[in-house]
Image (cartoon, rainbow, N blue to C red; front, side, top):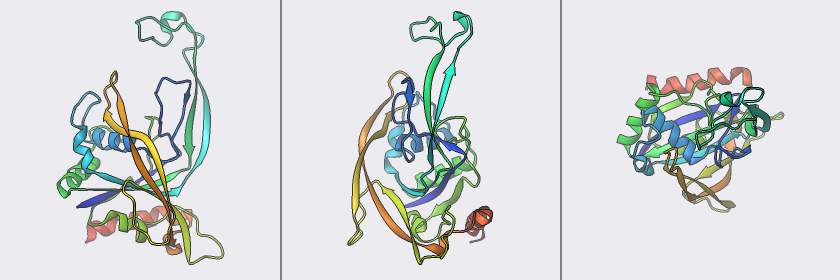
Length: 254
């Protein structure tokens, strides 16, 4: 088993848990498995109607919450003030005749670092696709463009260990500096950490099909735990990009 490391950061992110056609289009507080699978599948050029999602079942995603972000709600309208033929279409082939009103939820200023673990052949193929994506990645919605660097490392023997001990943490250092800082991790398999509380969550975000008219998901368990990471992983925001680039370049120099 090996893996790769992704950093999901940008002004806005949105990891929807409900249908795209509800009046309130919410966001999960962290990237869903459906969204992460979609990023990888898009990079490899798989369309919504393509089969083969089971190829991603061999992967495990571990999420480190560098910054949880702040919830932002956007009052959004589409199609208002136009003649009916120019308003949003309905599934029955007509038009709505009035503005469609939604409230779209985003996470502002959030940062998540993701360890993707799986068979070496799978992760190597995916890493190559992320370096030369068929469709560009985005953070839940096409308007949410990721910051650089996006792919931190393409070939990592133990990406979860890297998250805990080496990957720079997108968080300002505290003053005075403590020895360790608390950081939330989300696992897909229950971690064995003595004398540490583990919260068990459920999410209906395991993708079965992305097809437009037969989209479906199943439920998975998520194990949330707080690790204490060395404060030396934090750095001032003005130095963060340099630290991240230096971390990325270490792999190329090895």
